[in-house]
Image 1 (spheres, rainbow, N blue to C red):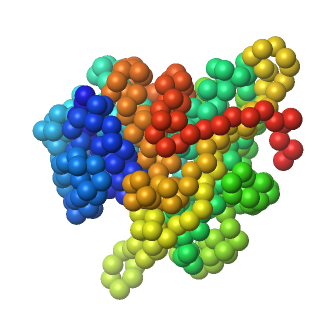
Image 2 (cartoon, rainbow, N blue to C red):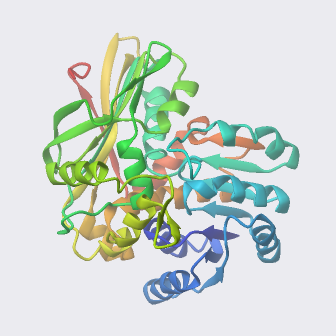
Length: 403
């Protein structure tokens, strides 16, 4: 039984805290902090109503390292779970170093002023975490997170090597809004409008955003257009599966989403450079994020399913030649909402955050330094996925993907 501090109060945090409260044998004492305490209080009230568990709440600026360090030291958690914005990863890690507390996140660091995200800044902290005798676990969401664990499970149980890997992320849900993002709008739009990158023959190849489109028939969802884009797990997978010849990430978007995004880009609303408006400095993308529907409000109206997984081709473990496997999870938006009050996009990230935390708190995963989820034994994590709302399945395909 362990005390945990969760930072951030969006939809992912709500799911993670609800699921922690449903597992009191692991999470005996839950604390929740964010810049806006009323958001924490709303989550705590929902958790109390659904589970009977009390959650302590706090107001904190996650970019104020001294204040956050003091809060961590005052609470004394065994683990800090960072479910705030990726901009805040480094300050939260710094506070954990100050307090000597283990750390976990779901997305890698991204500077506010540059539309670029990579692991370098966090990997550079490895020696400091090791010297402090504490562990930082990076990328314990779904993608990154579960998709990386899927790959490592295949490599442990099905494939001696992975030659080609495609990650397919399909959201077949309909929230009824003209335009909305299913997770933080600022992060979502920055990712989607960035140049695509994929790993091929030992290097990353860059292409224009949303330039490559492929149709794919997803089980329980149906045919969808998916677009190649860059996602951070490609960087870590290329590092921890060194034999990879090609790795790509695909995400589905409807035509209406693409049309809205194109217009917003053309009129300058996704810019990240401050502009002056009526004597004040504002960032267009941040203003846009403020007026768009909040992802955590989409749960009551979202219907449909997600289907997210990996297709991997490589040398079979049993010596039978080259084989291709498809491993994936299907999650229902309405089921996720009924259980936690949040739609499936938040659910598919919040549940793995809870499971990664459980791995660390129970000692299933240990270490001193900074680690990616690919470096851990996939089996106990995969078992908990089946037990806590994200069951997975794997099937053999006739051959490698044709796209």
